[in-house]
Length: 227
Ligand SMILES: Cc1cc2nc3c(=O)[nH]c(=O)nc-3n(C[C@H](O)[C@H](O)[C@H](O)COP(=O)(O)O)c2cc1C
Image (tube, rainbow, N blue to C red; front, side):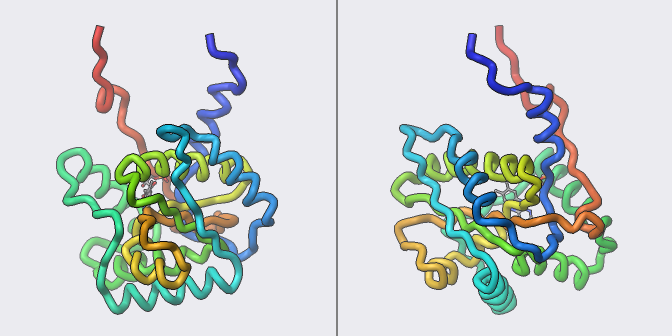
């Protein structure tokens, strides 16, 4: 039997408490806390222990420079992610996507058909929801989907480690829409795929965008037991 090093109930509580934060206070997170989160997150498994993730982390004026550049790029249009966005969402995936989208819109007071309101909320992605820090995640292009898969584990671990440190976060594929600009601005080499961003900082708990929680499918919806 594997030696038990943590309590599953406690881990489950941590996982339940973590949620995507979409409104932050401006206060920065201490560098040593960020480093602790990174050291914790990097303990995830990766194929061949390649640890393909790299994170470009912004603070202070650099985060402001990033949100300004993203907002400008979004207003100009021209979606160009390194990693193809999904072709579509069907069936239960579409239903879950709609449910979480509407939960957010409802929380911030955007009603059905309010195109200006939903566009305004979408643009908050590029404002990094007011977060004081943003981590841009990349993996080597030559590792392909498995590099991205390993990095997905890193994203999950980062957000959980952050939660354990009292730091709120949100993963953002939206930021990766403007990969060419990010490569240039942050000097991320062209042979690395920009996967997503994680904006993080201390939550503004009273903001309406933080007042809803998503649900999860019951076990039978995603399990298939054999034997
Ligand atoms: C890879 C990835 C990309 C995401 N991209 C975005 C995004 O661009 N904008 C956003 O508001 N949320 C984004 N999210 C957050 C998801 O919407 C969120 O995790 C999901 O709705 C479940 O809610 P929860 O994180 O609060 O549990 C992303 C999450 C992941 C894992």
